[in-house]
Image 1 (cartoon, rainbow, N blue to C red):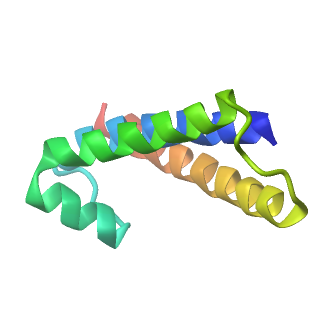
Image 2 (image 1 turned 90 degrees about the vertical axis):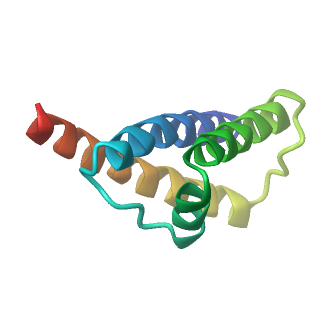
Length: 98
C-alpha cells in the first residue's frame, strides 16, 4: 500500500508539471474541472496545489498514517492505473510537440 501511495504522489507531482507546461503552450486542456478552475484563476496556484497534494500524500506515507484496507487499496490501484494512463497521454503530446 505504501509503494502505491508513493507512486501516486510522484505521478501527481509529475502530472502537475507536465500539465502546467502543456497548458502554458496551449497543447492540451485540463480535463479535471476543479484543477481547470484553479489554473484559470491563477496558474501558479495550480502548481502549488498539485505539489501540496503530493507532499501531503508523501508525508502520510512516511509517517505510516495511510490506513490499509481492501477498499482503499483497490481505489489506490485504480488511481495509480489511471494516472499511469495519463502519463502515456502526456508522453504522446510531448512526442508530437517535438
